[in-house]
Length: 322
Image 1 (cartoon, rainbow, N blue to C red):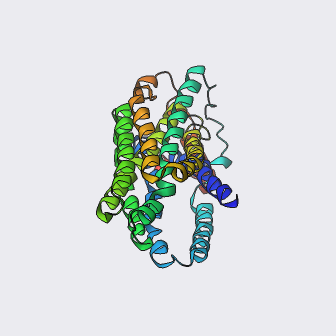
Image 2 (spheres, rainbow, N blue to C red):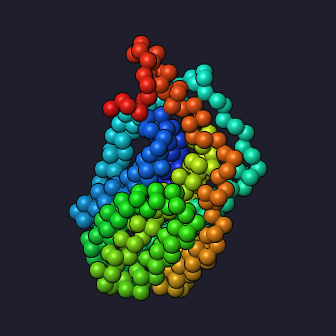
Image 3 (cartoon, helix red, strand yellow):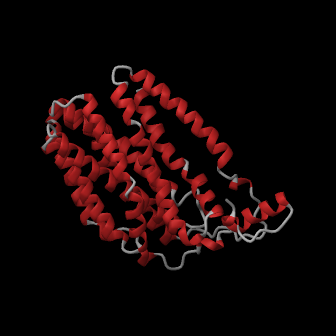
């Protein structure tokens, strides 16, 4: 029970941290590269996954110490965020336009985006939860060898920054379908050859690229759908993805206990293929007309005003600050 609550809280926090990151990004970074910076922020998760490999390799028999070390790193991250991320929430944008009322069409698009994110998290939960168990129990690989899966996943996930940025600028629906098919391919490849370390690592490369590309795409689509409401647009799809993973983990566990790893992973892969086929309904660029431009949200002007008040001299743009 406590483990389930911990996993759920960890997943939900991924979405809850996005308002601060996106607000800081819009205040500090030039609007022309917002999409690119959002992709990089999201892909930063891959670095953490890759750096967790030493814990898997050297602390297999002392998992409590591994978790305590991660807790210490998280506390350091909190302190760094406290001092480095600008307090955009304290700004008083006297000359900023208030966020517009959310229209029914925007609610519908956000609902569709959240449903896609939920199903992707549901499908990906099979790999996140039982990927290492599959190669160790069914493939007879060692726990140390399973650590290479996370290293490959983290390295490939960095490519998600490029893919999601290109998808946001071109055709999000087609990229969503392709990345989801790659996600299902990683599931079937791992289930088909769990004893082959090189194929297992290759499946992790595919999964990492596809997963980070999809989460980055959801992030940027959410910002575009509700540019004036950063506490909602990018957060809801991330929370939906976390809920999908929380819902998928016990279900894949039940299926593994009933049918085995291969059949269970095949079922989740089939769900992924179906969702990929309905990706033309993904809320892409053709639905963005009529929304408020990001420069009208007032964040940049508000942050400039705060800097002017603190330093006593006008600034052309906060994005020029180091």
